[in-house]
Length: 150
Image (cartoon, rainbow, N blue to C red; front, side, top):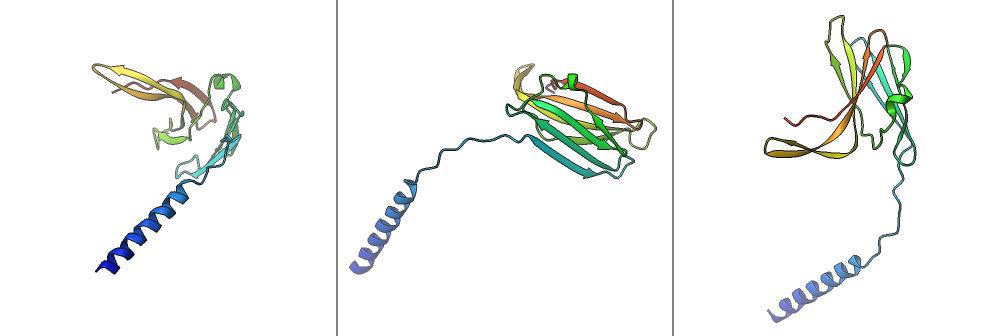
């Protein structure tokens, strides 16, 4: 019994020692580097077919361009609509009015730092939303919005 307690003590001692040694290892200095270009692709079952969204950013996270390819066309979001857009998240896609003559492809991006929205007695943190709407004629509409708290 004494031998088994001795071995148990030694095992605990050495396993604890090895954990302490592992914890002393330094993490190297590093700097996170932002992506300058990101490309997203998907295939839709509607008339929009394959959709490619290409986002180019500067080193500080400010968006330089958004190019959307669909309906056999390349559509560049007007640069003046991208002023003040930074920290852009990944896109979400939706088809509005599906099957009708007013069918639209909507591309949503959250961007910027979270903003606190107060409603009644509660509050929540939300990000601003950049919405890009493309109709079947290739016309682009762009809107910036702070989501309402519901």
